[in-house]
Length: 133
Image 1: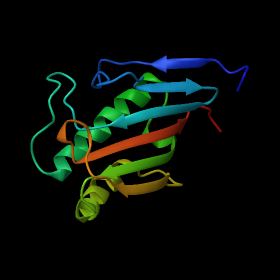
Image 2: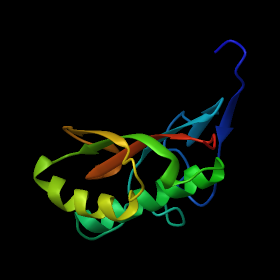
Image 3: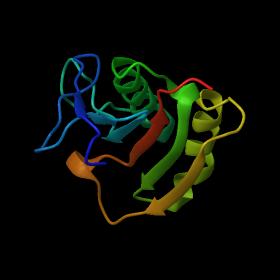
């Protein structure tokens, strides 16, 4: 890691960070995308609607960050999904499955948390590969 260059990834196609962190950091052939919540990048507000609408926005934000890093959802190797209510898991999973369709599917962990920033119900972070096989 000592010889690896760290590159901050930034894009206006996804919400600006709400704290002292990068949207993503690239290191070698990997991209570490910070957790995305369902913020509309233009208004800076949490999108309204149900958990499906929030999940769609989260994945759109995550996709924009990954594209700015030179990769895509198809290159994701690991995700972590944070939910404020695990009862939402089946509905989140339906949206997730529409976007993460490549094989092999990413490794994933899903965790229920007490709260998420700005009252979001879902947050997803990802690790992706920029290297081509």
